[in-house]
Each structure stands twice: as structure tokens, then as C-alpha cells.
Length: 70
Image 1: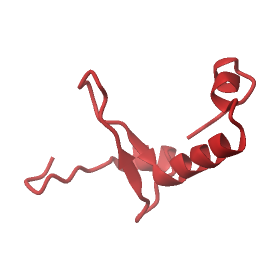
Image 2 (image 1 turned 120 degrees about the vertical axis):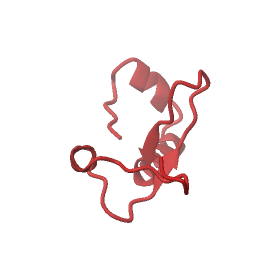
Image 3 (image 1 turned 90 degrees about the vertical axis):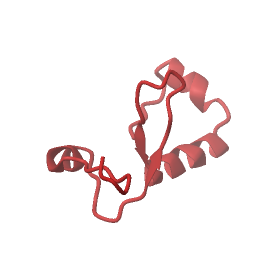
């Protein structure tokens, strides 16, 4: 982490995760303090859209009826 609080995401990880320059990421904090997951804002928007359209989405995901990729 830089003195400004910035972090660098390695190029191969950016490519594998399809993170483009200027892509907006959500920074989450784990309750156990073990890390900070990064989620593409576009993936979160898609998840929220799907949740609003299907109130049973999470139970379907748990039952593996729906495949969801971020």
C-alpha cells in the first residue's frame, strides 16, 4: 500500500478478473478482519437487479438452481 493508501492490482489478476482501467470496485470489509474483498460495481448492480426481479434468488443459489458469477 502506498503512502496515499493506494493499492496495486497485479496485471494478470486484472486480466483474469476482467477489470478494465477506470472500472469501479466496491471495497468490502470481512467481519473477521481477514481481508478486504473487491467486487466490480457492475457485478453488484447485476446482482441487485436480479434480486429485485426474483425474491427467491438466494434460495435458488443455495440450492444450485441458479449459477451466478461476479
